Length: 385
Image (spheres, rainbow, N blue to C red):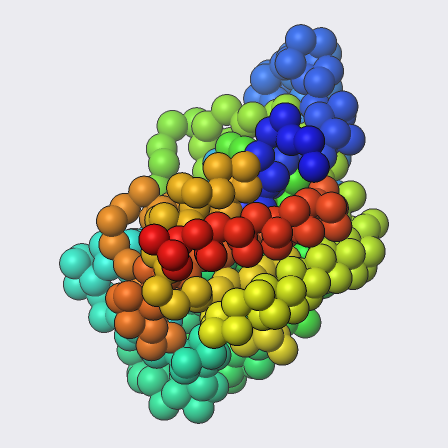
């Protein structure tokens, strides 16, 4: 296979921008470049109309009302705004938060900050397959619990969590329910009302849109939700998230959501076929390989594996023409062992022998076959060494 660029199999860290998205964004760099906040001329009117059209497209994807959707710089900011905004609001006096020890660092780091500020955070464990115990959630609820936050699809091991069931528990106990949907919006059918989601954070760059923009859904019907803005200066986004809107990115975000909605089933079918082919062939050439996470409830493109006695750093350095990772892009530069793999019981040695494949819309069977062949060669060489 003639490669001019490495094969990209890290689609859980980010995705390439779909060419159709790029085309829709282009006029907003040098033709329709107005500030959405300018209300006295055509350039501002064009920008505002385009933002609202994008908002409509995105709202349609998650089945919410347009006025319940707010733009941010990405899922990390949305998570910060949702969790800190709730905690720091004077309308909320309770102090207990429930989350899980396998969450994305964006959530864990915010919870650690809130813990230092006097909030009590329960980090519930997951089992060896990365799954959660609904009864444990129920048993962890106290009179002081005001918030439960969980990711919908695990960015490292791919587990998809039973959001509707958790949402029902939260509703029955009058608890605000926040979901990190960065890995599932646009990949799984989401209905925020049916799932009893009160707050949903997500990003454009995980679904073939541009980096630098994301969304936060805030349920209007839940009168308990009062968010204190964590950024000040300007009245944009109904004073929830002030700052000049990145119109070109928001336009791209909206187009990316429309494409996802139109192609969700076909995308998942093709991606799942490539994932299963990769997994089955790796099992043949590496008999002692271990699949991390639950294969039954899993994101279609995710494959996280442990290859015992082969350091992931050595494997990735040897596979220069294939882009894979050892976990979340937010932590891959850190020397720490993956907290998610530790949460499912892997030793430090096994966690450091684990790699994550992220298959996406634009990957091909030829790329997967090439990857299988190169991994076979490389693992054999490393074992000899």
